[in-house]
Amino acid sequence: MQFKIDARDQYTVITPEKGSLDASLAADLAEQCQLLAGKGSKNFLVDLEHCQDVGTDFLNPFIELSSACYEREQSFVLTNPPADMIRIIKEEDAIDLLNYAPTIAEAADIICMEILERDLLAE
View (cartoon, helix red, strand yellow):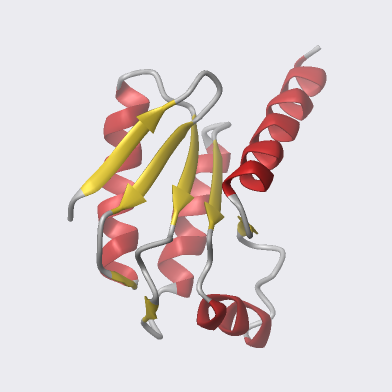
């Protein structure tokens, strides 16, 4: 899977260049997050603008990836979600298990708030 990577001050934007939102993408993203974490990235914003096809098997692998990031005190937020992704998340009552926002700016705000929260809890 090809990704466009854009490192910013507080987070890294990962944009899959094409593909479906499915378990395979989750596995590739997990590998990419691990690689980037090894280079110092701690917070990940995944832009799904090019992933309009949604597989039925995406939800659990994405929840596992998100949970793994949060266990390592990293942020993981999806943006530009396809309508089918939101529908499946709501149908499966998983709305509290994945962070997603309609725009990159809103996703970045979520990450910044999580960074502040972690800093406050660490004091």
